[in-house]
Image (cartoon, rainbow, N blue to C red; front, side):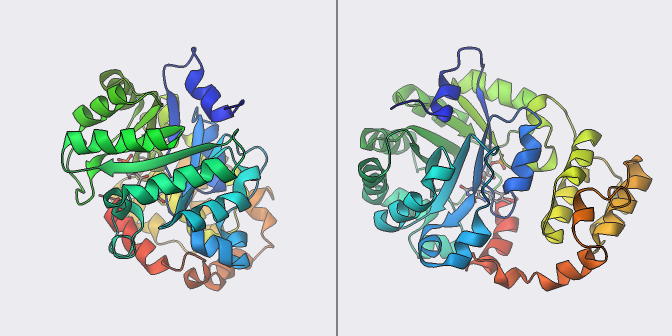
Length: 350
Ligand SMILES: Cc1cc2nc3c(=O)[nH]c(=O)nc-3n(C[C@H](O)[C@H](O)[C@H](O)COP(=O)(O)O)c2cc1C
């Protein structure tokens, strides 16, 4: 493969390991990626985008992916149940990212019923087909990867990863749980075994809540990368070694331009969970207007009121931020499985 920033990261001898933000439906969007890149996150994944919708619908393309030339290195993750959708969607997006990933881990009912996500673990031929067709049709300087869960036993998991490697993946992300596991501890032993059984870089995933976890798990498994989802959502400074959200990250979040109140607020709810007592959090979580959120943060943390200083959210015409929330119907978002995604938050948020 010719030069690719993701491969360069894995090959960087000065790095102990590559620090990776997980794909998270609704949350690993451009604004959040901008924030965590300020705190030592090396590589970001987009939320899962449904490949078939992305190919068919202009609206999906408009809503699901925002191009920003500074937002690199970047992996776009697709949900697909066949190679044709996967590669057609990849083709449309490939010049705006460094690689594409296939979701082989989503455990939600709709995904399993329709042959997406973790259901693909039972159909390795489809995974291999996606990888091979990607390799045949997409420029060779882009990565192709899969993010998967574990199978019933270690041998089957290793076997699958070796098959996927033989098909031509650039790297593999392993979430150390089986499809139906939610809160069980991750199987580091199996991740270690997989890492020792393939030659491509492996990113470990699951239960990384702070930098010490990341260092310890990386040391144990020997993986080249460590990925966090819930940990980094609750503490965007995780990879920079902060044990809870640094106030500077809250400030930076306000400085970023937001277009959707719901996401703007949700992220702050996560970030502030370890900074505020329960009774105060409850009030914060109920706020419905950007101006109220900003005033609240000003009171609690003495963070300058960005609306008054006419930055970021100030760019939303004054007085519209509350109304904006009302107008942005969740149902308009393109993921046709939006309701499932709402369900999924509880499910993923195990
Ligand atoms: C809100 C949320 C959304 C998620 N969306 C995706 C997704 O789009 N694609 C994916 O492969 N995994 C998704 N996941 C799973 C995570 O990427 C990760 O594999 C899982 O949460 C375990 O990592 P953690 O213990 O660091 O949270 C999501 C998880 C959460 C919490």
